[in-house]
Length: 296
Image (cartoon, rainbow, N blue to C red; front, side, top):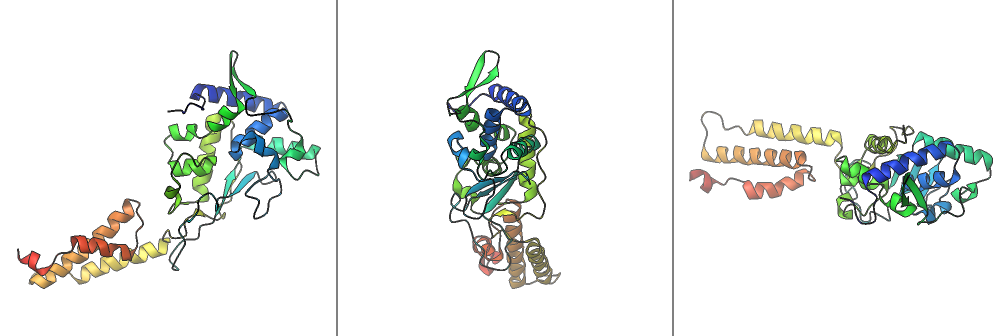
């Protein structure tokens, strides 16, 4: 359900379609609104966004590559860090593609202002404020602020995970920051969400996001080879402890505990919980079978 400050779905998609048409026609005002929406920033902050970014800038846009770079280390603080060699590599800088429509318009603006370093240097619109009305239809207008604040609802109503919505739309009010502690997104995850978002708005294809871009997020998500090796160890341990036809109580208890360990580890993995071999110790303590219980 939309918040009080958000547009309805009909208002938003209608306004988005009109914005796209006017951007194609060369409107600097609508280009700035589209850019603010893709950046996920209030309209007043867009002029300060660098066109040539470097570490420490927070958020910047690269019109030549058609990408937005956002350093989220200050937003998602205390993100889990790797304590072993088994974790995957996840960065604090999130890279997102933008609609090709937006990229073309930005490159045209930069051609007119070749010395531009910040968005404000492009002279897109000086009189644009949060309450500036945007036409949604012939008789209805929405404000710039309402349009931008509604940017995430399309993905939410499409059933996208809230963590993915937050990073794709730069809208971290949609989910608790603790959700991001262990989360890890691949470039394909981000590109797919941005493409669905742009298509839903009628803004078309997004730019290409190189697959070699660093994953964003947690550094403790276990690497694929670690998971494969852990599963192999669990299966081998289970086979080695099989009680056979002539079993004794101690042997049966060992096999049961090995089975509980393997089942607990796989359950945590499939349920999406942090899964490591150390965590299975708690499952073993809770579900372990002792000799006295076996005799019962």
